Image: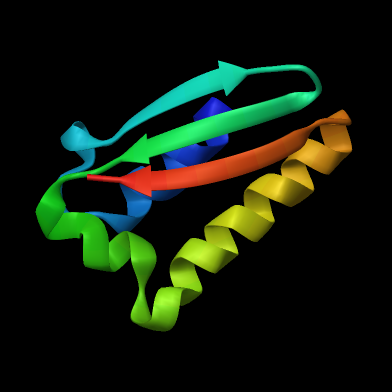
Length: 76
């Protein structure tokens, strides 16, 4: 999960070296925290949050395939 989110985020931003993903695994749920440079927040969130929604849907779908719930939080 962490690797997929890292790959997607690094391909969206201008500063891929500043992308970090923290994974917190709980009871049947995985929480992912995505950190990017403040200049890249707009690229990760997108207009009206469309890209952020797409990222969350993608990660939720990948989690379903593995039988776990996934949530994504985007911070700078």
